[in-house]
Image 1 (tube, rainbow, N blue to C red):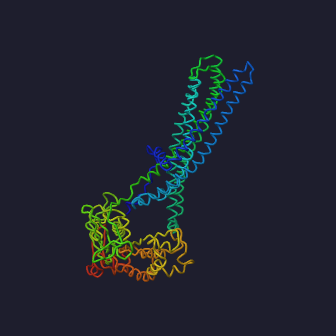
Image 2: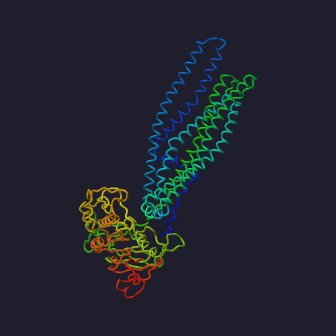
Image 3: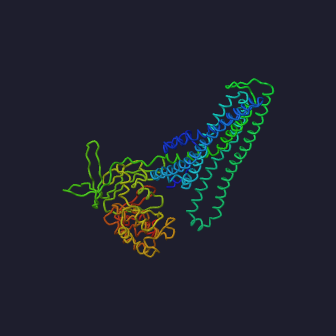
Length: 638
């Protein structure tokens, strides 16, 4: 399976249309709240842009009454403007409170819903996805990429909307008052945009690289944490530190360059805004003194009542352009994170075209009849759409492979023309060197992968027609690598059958030979396990896994090196339980120990994906082929 293990990190470069998809997702999750929040943001931004109009009117009133000295009439108008502005500010404050509170709720809600969708999608992905993607990098999508999306949704997008509304309103007001001064502001804005493109583009590139480097580093940390025992037993600590330092230095370099560009951009834009403010003040004063004719929608002449509010609008305009520049990094990182999130969500799910299902059945008048209650009899429910009929086939555990070819990747065939059968109740063993294809055959029976050519039939039914969930429900499997989940020992055994009673779980543990050590644990079956059962020995973990398979009580069992981690004495105990467990079931055994293989009904010897010998132990010994060499050469079949 070496070809499968080429871990690939998802692309970090945002695709086109990611921003639109983010916004669409936000509206899908909150179709009512989002429009209300956007209205509040628009209202708040518009109100923040209109004080210049009131300032112009107030200064104009003062200019009109400067020489006449009629301040009583002037004060009434000024008070009226101030009161209107105060009311607008109060409403704006209310809108700001509403959209900030709603924004916090919506942001966290969106992230929570996305995590749920990602996790559900991840559960639907084929095994191949996890074999070809770095697990730490996948975890980075749930942590780092979700966090960058949080910043985009909660800060950058609202700020961009505020900026867009503010800039639009301010530009309209500036054009209303003076075209000449507006053109000067536009010239300064062009300089700001040029610098933003130059430095912001470099910053965005390195922030994307930073995100990718962070995913690699987290993936490496997870890999080393999982392999700490191997690292220590081979004294590989220094090499691990060296490799981590390389990844960390790359992350540091990318972060340093990204933040260097970002830190340059802010001060430069602020100072350009200040310079533009001074230029507008000088230009306005010059136009007033030189009596330059004003060109405007309002028809007002250039005066202090126009120039002074223009200074405020210039500061506001430049500040908002600067805000856009400051948000570039967050936008790019957020889009890169969203891209990786959507890339995970867009992965093709595991294909399941099956329509044959597994149902409880009972016999009536010699015929199988579907029923709700458990009878101990299972049947395959096979609908025939053309005839409009349904047939039932008793689940017996008859598994047959016909001329099966398979490769994990194209042009690299792992299994060649494999044909075998396992009749109900038979014990079939696969032996051979590592990489011969033993585990691959069981992966195909489970439909973790689909064959390239040939057929696999289960009770005479092509397994491609059987729904995967029902197929796997009929199969029990004990893997060489044991996975225990956080919870009690009882919970881990019950994982094989979620509705199993405590008595059924204990019975399964006794059958597997696990009861004796479980009862000696501090809290017995209620002992809490964590970190993949790190407090237990490898053999004890394997016994729990065997008990988990036993409680499922399937008609077909797959034992992939199930006793490889158990000592010889414990194996003798477990073997008795395994024999009882395997009785009446079709069993596929992958093992190197002859004690597990010897009593099989048929032994398949594989070499480079081909079955080169088959038969009982006695028959293969008589033939004096490769099995004979393995048997006489060592107790271990490798």
